[in-house]
Length: 189
Length: 92
Image (tube, rainbow over all chains, first blue to last red; front, side, top):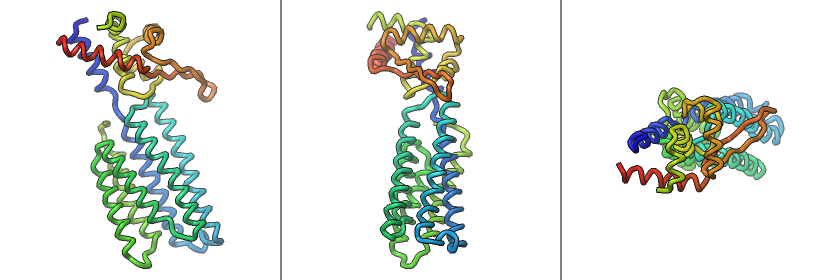
């Protein structure tokens, strides 16, 4: 085997290693749909969700926790199917795992202190989306994050805004649409 | 160039395996089988040789009652491969 052949084998092998973007797209779509559905259900049926003070706490913590269990199971399965994890995949996984834990912490802390967690969550989500978009070099996710950040800042200047509708608008443009674009993408990074 | 490494990576299956492991955190046997396009037995032998020379880690464990093996590159493996790659480029 010549030196050129060795170099060719190395380059070809490295080119074959792709970061699979579909699971991230699927995760964004799943969470987008879940949060939008939960927000709309809360908006239209407040008497059910806010039956007691702690019922809304349970609603906004228990369902996302179940969602986390499901997405963790899905991500482990898709990782096993692929058979390997790239450095890029590991970075994205860690970022979103930390976001998930922060999300639950923010919800619990805000609800225990009788304040609304929506703005804090959307702010954190926008930064995570921007980071993810920049890391995987996918503009719709980066722009979705920037749009969500601007929208979240805007909500601080609008008094008496309905946070459930803020959630629906913010998550649709920041998570659901970029997630769909990523999921429907054919090439991998 | 380190003669031992040069000799080890002269084999295309070992070279493909270590090039792949340079780009991933961990991988399973099937992924290496796909990337090296070799037979199970041959790949297993080549991986054991890479492991014996300290270039890769082999971690065996049970997942849902099934034996699973994860492969990753060691620090020595990374350094050796980088040196080997630089030497190849300089000789080109």
